[in-house]
Structures are given as structure tokens and as C-alpha cells.
Image 1 (cartoon, rainbow, N blue to C red):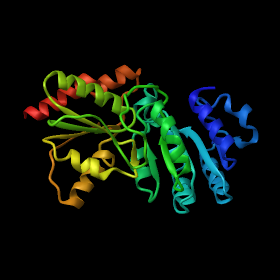
Image 2: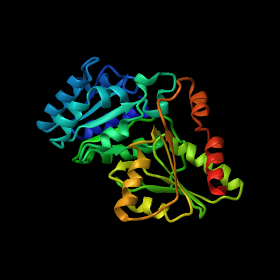
Image 3: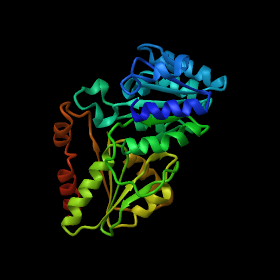
Length: 299
């Protein structure tokens, strides 16, 4: 079994309330059904039905962990997520595959680059965006144990980041320290931020890199601390509007704090291709990110 499957199997063995569901998205779950039997439910390509069924199971004491492509899990089934799960604050865990840039070769219909905005808009919906598979596996038990619903941006890349602190919901980790610029990111883009910071450090620019880990609950203190530096940069594979940059703007307004912010995100859907070409075309390679940050500092 793959590490994610093994962790699910172990957690299900410890807690009989856990049920795994999928809308015919078994890429990360190929061998789990034969291990857990009828506690694995595949509803077919019917995300709305899956969310409704998961809500019903949660009302009866289960903890459903549901899987689908992020776009269809979040967009197609949004009303069901909002109404059936969100209003009832049910402990359904939504695992979205290939979010953001990870849909690389797929076009706009499969690009989940509005998902944070939609999930952030549901009161008490947690959002877990691990930087790599290691962080996904470390944080998943806490997410499943939480009483709230959660949206998880699934990532299967192991060991992309040298993590510095134990995982805790609502607590970010600082991956590097510096006094010139703070780079704040989440999910897949954390690895890009770390590499961009390394390039900047070689040019004598000190970078603090903050991995948010969870967007909700949010580590507001870490964000406000980052804003004390000469420049704070947000990097995300999400639309610029209503993503992390917008969340940060709202916090600055609430706190009546002025900060020099460089938001880096997507103005529209990205051009599909292999991941390396997607990053280059969108301006998200570490070198391109470092150049944008350097130019802002020098302006």
C-alpha cells in the first residue's frame, strides 16, 4: 500500500467510525477497498450524491473521508458542501485531488484555482493545504479528529520541504529566517517559495519563509509578524482575488496595519501543459519568483 492508503487503513483500524468514500477517484486508494471492505464506498461519478450521503453518515456518528477531483468536489457539489455539511458543521473531510498547478495538463474545467475562496466562505470549514506528502500524513490524524468539516488540498510529492516544527492545526511553521522579506505560502507553492528564497539569499537578501499549513484555522499572528518586515510576499496557485492575498488584506484592514505586500497568484486560469512548462508560462519558477521579489525590493 502507498503511505496515504496505509495511514487511512491504520486510522480506520483504530476508529470504526471512519468511512472512506470516492466519486470514482481511486488514484490514491487503489488497494484500500480490499483491506477495509464495506467501509469503502464508491458512488461513481456523482459528487453531489457522495456529499449528501456523507452528511447522512456523519449525522449517524460516522466520520466520512470523501475523495474526488478538487474541481468537482468543490464546484459541482458546492451547494451540498455548504448546505448539507457546512450549515450542520458535520465532520466530513473533503479530500481534493490535483488542486491548483497539480492539474498541470488539464484545462480550466479541471483547474481548482478558486477552491480556497469557496471553502473559506463557509463558516467553520477547516482548510488543510500540506506542502508535501510528509506533511499530509503528519497532519491528517489531527484533521480527522477535529469536530469540524475540513477541505484538504491533496498532495502526493514526498519530502519537498525540510519541515522545522511539529504539525498543529492553526499553527504555521517558519522554514527560514531573514530580515528583508517574508514569503508566505501554502501547499505545492511552499516548495517553490523555499527555492526562491534560496536564490535570493545567494544574492544577499534575507528571507523568512512561512508555511501556513492550514488556511483555516489561520495563524493570524504569523501573518501580522510577517507584515513587520520591509516586504511580505504571498505566493499561491490560486486566483489573486479571494485567495490568501485577499485574506491578508482583510486582516490588515481589521487590525489597521499598513504593510508593503506583493501578491503573487493567478489572474486567470493557467495554460495547461507539463508541470515545468505550466510554472514557466505562469511565472512561477523559483527563478522567476526571485526576480519579481528582487525587483519589488529595488523599486
